[in-house]
Picture (tube, rainbow, N blue to C red):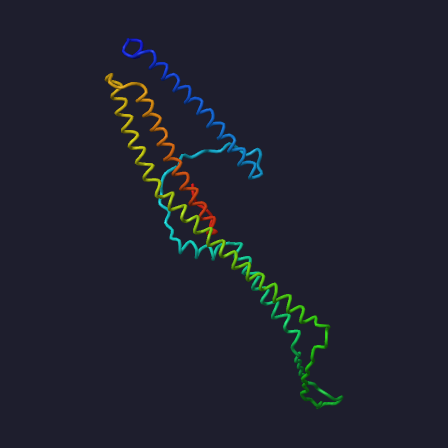
Length: 255
């Protein structure tokens, strides 16, 4: 419009057309990345012919309430890999106790109440007995069984401690990443507001003829970059929440 009535040079129109072409190219690249992400997800799930997905625009900030201490406590309670080792260690303790019984004598007892005789009234009475049996030499089989059970117990105990240290580190790292991502969001949001103000100024200057298209283009690029950074900050925050919940061992409800 400005060019047709002679108020703007041909350069301005050409610059706008170039910007439009670049925007279309970016759109094509993003759509391709989206399609690749879908087939990658389908492959990971083992569903190559999955139906079309409904994408929800839910990139909004909602503070995740969690403390580091609570997260660590929940992880020790909920992590299935840790609970599996704890269960195996308990079974190993019981195996040690069972093996050690091979050293102990076995005490047996019996009692009976009998009626005797062929004519009425018959005789009757109690008889009882107690016996003790001692294990015979088995070629140190019992000792080997106890040693094996004990060694297995200590291996599991060491594995438990190693896993707890790994879980602790994983939770700490995830929690720190979450808090860093949370702190980045207000800064990214402020950058968007400042970029919006800047583009309003650039458009105003251009409309009255004191600005040039490069100012407007720069302002538009700055705003686009600021919005991208803000969305990226929200995305990183949601991923950080999911990572922390995975480390804690709870099902993620992040959407």
